[in-house]
Image (spheres, helix red, strand yellow):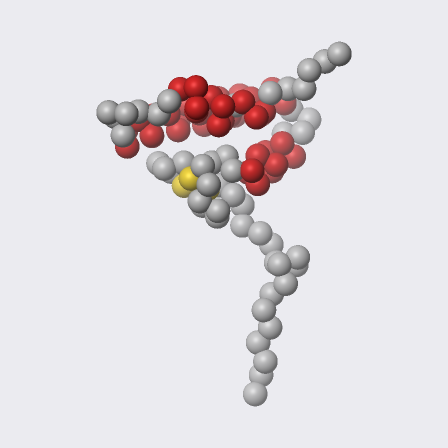
Length: 96
């Protein structure tokens, strides 16, 4: 009789925390995307290109606003909340 082993989380590759469109929820944890794990991954991916990160996030903010508005045109997404969700966390550090 063979014994099945459960993969160790430390050695099992994790699934990327990508958006589920048009809801813009994380495909893995169901949090509003970009979730905290996606934010960390994006910061790491764009570590040497903060402007590129901002441009990318502006583009997905535009797509998310359009998708979310189509899903709920009467109440529509709150622009300030979307800005905070997609761009507010990615502000460049202040230069001193």
